[in-house]
Length: 131
Image 1 (cartoon, rainbow, N blue to C red):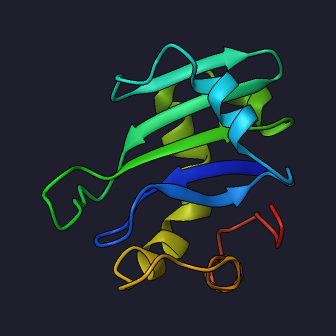
Image 2: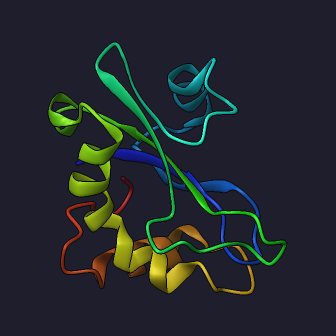
């Protein structure tokens, strides 16, 4: 399964942790989230994609006290069954939760290798390298 996932950590800024297999995930991300930039919770279908945004389910905040958002572009086939933000938290978040737990407190932004290692260490993750 492929996802585009952007978030931030305790000390590192908002960035892509997963690229969905795109050389540059930014255009896909921008298209999916266009017009909902200020909304805290989003679940919106854009063609075959689903733009999904929710606050960190563990209530984590960065060192400035800002809530940690998770912006995810869900690609098919999982996008076909995500119809609400709650669906996303239930179906998508378990695949990312343990990896994020390992990454969010790192003092520097995680590298691609850090993300792949964290995902491979997560038993619920169905996201493989390069996703």
